Length: 415
Image (cartoon, rainbow, N blue to C red; front, side):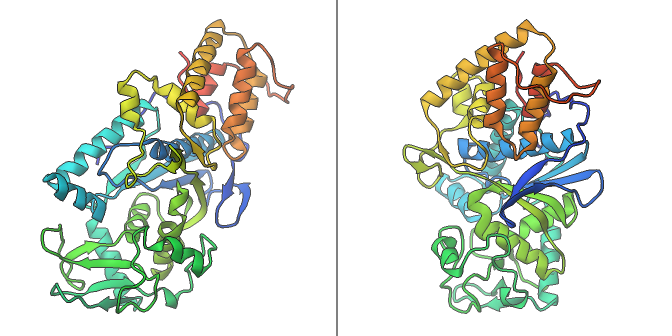
């Protein structure tokens, strides 16, 4: 699957200093040390393509983009991967509601998502793969879990074949990423795609591995499993393994994926006899009109509509930068007005030119410290006002072009 066209990007000469990132699993900020020397691997969970990109999505992919850029600035070669969940209940339900083929709906929304990412100058993933494209690997993984004795059948009254579930009790991996209690898990499991009360399950949190074919649903033949389609969590294990190899360095996504998705993706990998991700980095939730933006609530601010209405994409990017990626925040028109003013001021300062090595190094330092974009904006605000940050120790070849640095490090086009 084609992702989107890459923006022009010229990384700065490598700083050699590590990216320090908050790891959800350990609960602390620590240096990112790639498992493969000099090669950092990043996976970010992708969209379920039944609607366009809203600001909550944009915040997640903006954060992952900053991770990519920061890792490159340390001197690492960076490989990234991202999935598209084009086989899932919400997509199928929307396609049925609108009387369109689920593949056509998915393709149209993936194309719109790609346009939004291109407008925001987000670096495209090296692997951009849909569930339907990865079905061979997914079937092989679920079959391996059955063969390892990690899966069991749950019978259905209305279909011929049984569904397959992962038996979490065997490996003790539940909660490894989130650290949540079972009470905390139960509060959100059902609303996030789980079925804790289904009769026949061995454990409340056991996730669906393979759903037997139902009428009018897409399905694939799997000799040991029966005709059907995969559950949610196993897909990312397979696409990450294909694109990056396991274990990889950073699993990124929105904080609403900590449980169950990232917890249970890791549990799937453990059941297959392999570790999943080393570190987990999660973006906060974006609210609008007092509630978290979500398709179910319908309180969405769409990137493509903002751009269609004449909003400069770099102003949208500056709104995102105004909030630390891990924080929860609320979109407002006032935020956008501030970002527009900032962009105008920064571009005027860039036209004035001049060498500002200390400014560039201060920008790099803010990015390295857990992607501290509010601090980076404070540096840019001072630069645009003609102020210099405190003197930093600079090497003889330290870069000095602030506009080039803002582009390389933060994806900001100030031309």
